[in-house]
Image 1 (spheres, helix red, strand yellow):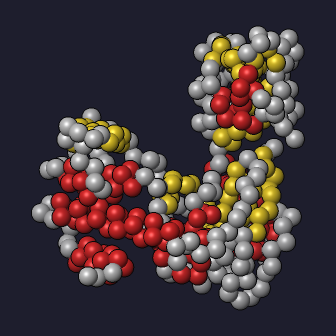
Image 2: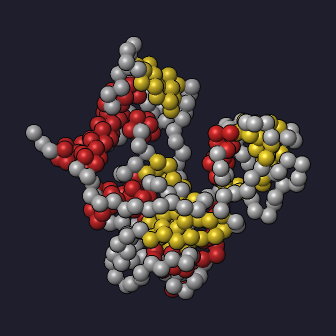
Image 3: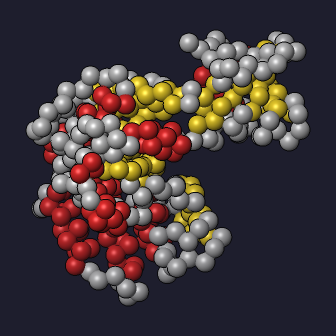
Length: 376
């Protein structure tokens, strides 16, 4: 019997040999599902064997950015320029053998920057400690792909991450899967399906062992998107592209890189010469979509000198986590003034989604309103 790796290779080869058209759509969809299941089994086996020594990184700040690139593209130099970190630099491959953190300040927010070992072809399969590096990448809030003119194959870098379940600049599919233990499997959609028609959705689900339950599809999803939902281990991360060592590039060379790196427009920088770094920092900060929340003590004006920094889409629950004490237990309600309030002083609960420059007073269970500052 062939080994797991051989089986994976066989399925990959069959997918690459099969020309995609309407006649082969169902077959390719089933093959992709089978491949995803095999890769999940490979991950499970690797974890069972210990999976090697991993990197331990303590997250801090309001968001974490991972520097991802080939060896020797200047990640360590960039970290040292942006933060007070001391990451070793050198003109040879694999200078960084551990994860080096640094802290960047932007608009009142603290952004943790992680310099990590360069990715190489085969990283998603474990080459060059790739699995350990990718495990850290999966926990970041933003990926900064750093390339240089001599290492500009961005697609290969992205493929390594995608092979490990990282979805770049995508949103989770609007698909809900509910597993059951009897009654068969029902598939319904709120839109016309062009990619999952003809029973393909049910066939993909069965490859994952889902024979009972329901699948509700609320967009014209692809087979790959349904597979991602069924696999359940995908992460969706925002990414930016930066071209380092750009100080010597001609206009034609820059134009070619813009085309090669499309659709995302790259930021041209030189970490060594300190060029383009301010624009890069602004792009990073803007992409993280921070929001400022002002805490208001009862009967007093809000404190607008030191806002609480949260992320777009955060709720009162996340705000409570960032405040000192046991407010997550004693919380009764919150009063809101600002963009997210339907009227001034609206009373809301834990699930209320906050917006930039909201003003918040927290009401605790004993019935007294209070507002608190961010924990030091």
